[in-house]
Image (cartoon, rainbow, N blue to C red; front, side, top):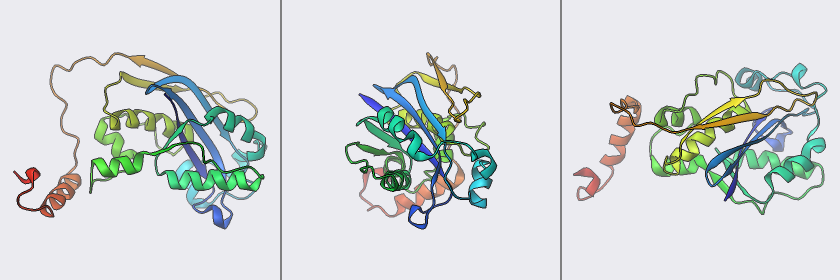
Length: 231
């Protein structure tokens, strides 16, 4: 079973208003295990990056000068994802941008790929609790200390670990290390190592915040008195 963890960074929030993709980052999983294969490009959006995006990602107009346009990397991107499942956090956002970019160059929308939205999964599993990528990293003990800025490849690496936990957390722990060097086109690779997860001498301390506990209590209060979760 081949799946692609995917994330994008964009100039703004709405492709219908002309916003464009400025970074794509993907990681390959086979049978819920990272293979070490990745796909990443910074992309010239042919327009200015919003101040909010610069604040969140640190990606500026100057950094994107000379980078390939989406049309230049489209074939390589489509070949990498194939027709396999795409695992995305808040999939409607990224898919809206990807299909807008494809439409801009006269290419068909992505319709053959199964879309797995980890945001929707998290909301079903933990109703009322925060479901951002950072919140899920805290819940599952995924180290996101290097995420001072958003980045498509880094966020894909974190999402891969969160996704494995959402699917049951039965796989060995994953450690991703991004290759900091990029080629002239702005592409960088990622290496991955797997380590056996040892048994802990003492249980982990709870990672549920007071806000999450309060949200859970409010959710339980809405259930019938006879519901099993109230006993």
